Length: 283
Figure 1 (tube, rainbow, N blue to C red):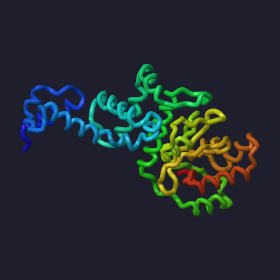
Figure 2: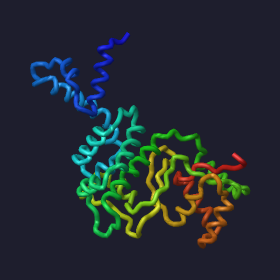
Figure 3: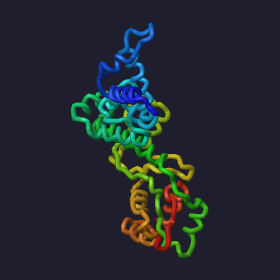
Figure 4: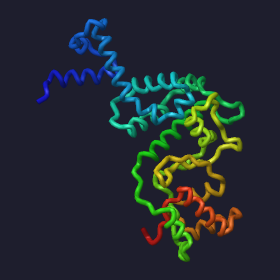
């Protein structure tokens, strides 16, 4: 049986994570000789609790950390933690709450944060847009890596089905965790710079204007960030399980692509782990 005193201590401690501790809680703490008072002891435990709670954010939002710098990112996390209404139990909930927090920031907050982001003068976007792009990239990669993937057919089997005489009625499909997005930030270059720890930390941009990117898990279940050209973007955007190969080839003709070129592109996307299923029948 749990003691009412212990339950109250736990409640008061949790309340102190996001507000000033009550005197009742401070009175329950007997500091060791090395500490100044009970408030100093409690602060150590509160700091440790916060560090354990927010530690997944350092692993998930590496692009935001790279873009802002470690010190400023830590300050942002502390502000997020202080404003948090509760204690998320896992990295998924915590990361989603953090992205929501970024989306709720006021303009003055973005201005203050933007001073820490280095942009090329011709990039065509603001520092706040770059930070949001980095946060969404990190969250999407995290989501792709977390969601359990269904059992998909091997690349070899998919290629065999593609070359079957009845393949025109099959429907190419991406992994359901795949994320399509448009960005002026070069997400491929950004993810590589973050991985390499590149300096100076100038945000890479798409020289030809906003581009389409695909964030997906390959056959080895590893997150990948891919820049799509116009033909790939058009095809991938319709690989939702509703378009047959026949309809994809027909639609591509309006953009000057032959049936052979479309099938070759489907084959290449299968090899790269982008297209993960060829559905048939009514399933």
